[in-house]
Each structure stands twice: as C-alpha cells, then as structure tokens.
Image 1: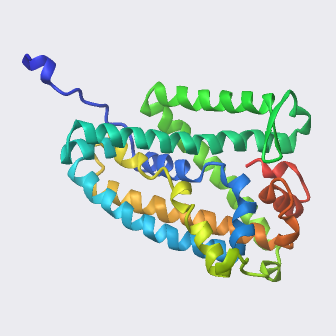
Image 2 (image 1 turned 120 degrees about the horizontal axis):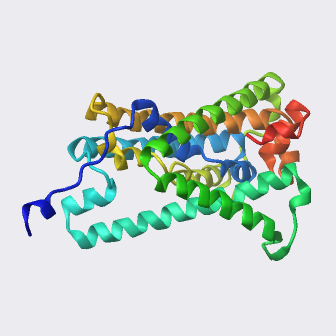
Image 3 (image 1 turned 60 degrees about the vertical axis):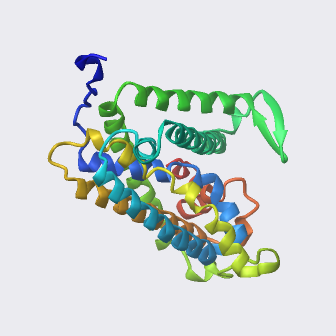
Length: 299
C-alpha cells in the first residue's frame, strides 16, 4: 500500500458548542414522548414516573462520564465503533456498529409513529386508507406516508453533511424548546398541585416500586442521542477542547432528564391525570385544556 492510499482522510472542523449540545439534546428529546406520556403515568403516576427518570438519568450520567473520558482519549468520528476497534478488533467493532444501528432504527420507529399521531390529532380528516390494526390501533396509509416523508427528510439532511445537519438541529431545537417552555409555564400557571394526586400508581405485585421500575427500565431508550457528541468529536472546531466536549455530554444528559421530568409534572397538574389516561394523546389533551386550544399541542 503506497503512502497516499494509507493516509486517513480528515474531516472539516465545523461543529461549535451550541451545535454539539443541540445535536445531543435534540436527539434525546425528539417527539416520541407525546405518545408515551400516558403509559408512563399509568405505570407509575406523576411522581413515580419522575423518580424513575431521575434514577435512570443518574445511571445514564455515569455512562456519559465514561463516554466523556473515552472521547477525550479518542476524539475521532465513529464513536463507539471506533472505540471497539481500538480496544478489540474489526469483528467487535462490526458487532457494535450493528447493535447501534438497530437501536437507532427502533427509536426512529417511535418518532415516525408520533408524527402521524400528532398530525391526526390536529387534522382528523387525514385518517385515510386503513391498512391493518395492532392491539386495537388502526394503522392508516396516510400515517405511513407522513412517517416515510419525515424519515426521508431527516436522512437527507444528515447525508448532505454535518454543517447542514447542525444548523437544522440548532434552529429546530431552539424553536422546539421555546414552544415547550411556553407550554410548560402555562401548564404550571393554570395547574393545581392537588391534581398530582395520587402521586404514584400501583403496578403488579410490586405496587409503587413496580411502577417506578417500569418507567426506569425505559429511560435508556428515551435518552438515546447523547452519543452523537462522541461521534462528531473529530469535527469539533479547533477552539473546543476535549474537556469541553466531555462536559457537553454531561450537560446534555442532565438537560434531557430535567426536560422529561418537567413535562411529566406540568402535564399532570393541568387536570386530573387519571381521568385523561384514556385519551389517545395524554400530553396533547392536558395542554389543550390548559390553553383551551387544540393547536398548541403541535410543538
């Protein structure tokens, strides 16, 4: 192999601090929680679900610390795949890569479903071309088309390069945070703390503990995304130190956990949370009550 072919290509250094944070935080919050809020509360109750997220988030934080240390040692693109390759060999990194791919695909499925659910809530007339049903939920062709359109759009944005992806994520995350912050503040303003009662839900033989464990077990799924920082570490601007990159991993995890807990508490305080559990979209209905408008739920 000659010298030219053995040289490793270099990547453009273009991601700044805000870009890294928005990439990770935006990936962790997504929109899947819109459809999951009801099941969380049904399983553990508002305080139980919050405790589950707090405990799960703390454990993820320790994992984030490990990522921060390894990222400082190996600030290259590829993240976990590169770490496995460095520590073991090609076969191990190959396996890690595929498991990561399966994880991302599973998260994308929830995000895609949520797009159809939210749009259907705002525009019920789009429920066309019923195809089949799963557990009593009707699947419509229009929902699948919407999901494919949005997934294709996000795929294209990421494919054209990190600069475009970073800008898109920054704008989207800032706009999304602004809308959600307004919703949460109005939720707290028009809420009653007594609506949080009962604070916990009973789940199986373990009761309250079982409910907390039920939510806790799903937390790693909802916090997938902080690893976008290690994967893009090689494209960090020269002014960003390795220590700063590691710190951004921790900050993004803490911010995402607080985001979920604030949403759980604020949406549960708007009305009697138990009476809203039968609604198709718990979060949407609770803030529809707070704002007395159906349109605010499309954050």
